Image (cartoon, rainbow, N blue to C red):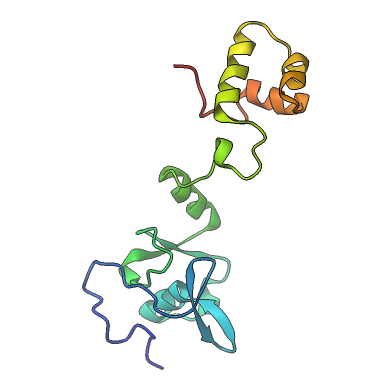
Length: 150
């Protein structure tokens, strides 16, 4: 079976975008009776390996374009590698942009100022209607460590 990107110029360093169906922003291709991510298929086709050989691994985009199927933009890694890549490129949602955030960045900055003035975790938690544990995690630097006073 010919690779589905057959006939495209692989020497070109530009992204090659998957033109078919998508799911969660990734190209998908029906193969073996199921929908598979197009970039995983492109990686395997290019390296002449079977999908089973990369089970448990992720195929990462160096170009950060989910629709790209250019094998020169794809590399194999672990989930941890992919997370590190995301954080190092600043694509990790954090702070008020996180879906679970109960506070705004400006509020956390004010909370950190209250720490310096000697306010207790309980007092601050009551002021912002969050748990004492939430405030404790901010104080210890386990959360919101990207927010600091200038």
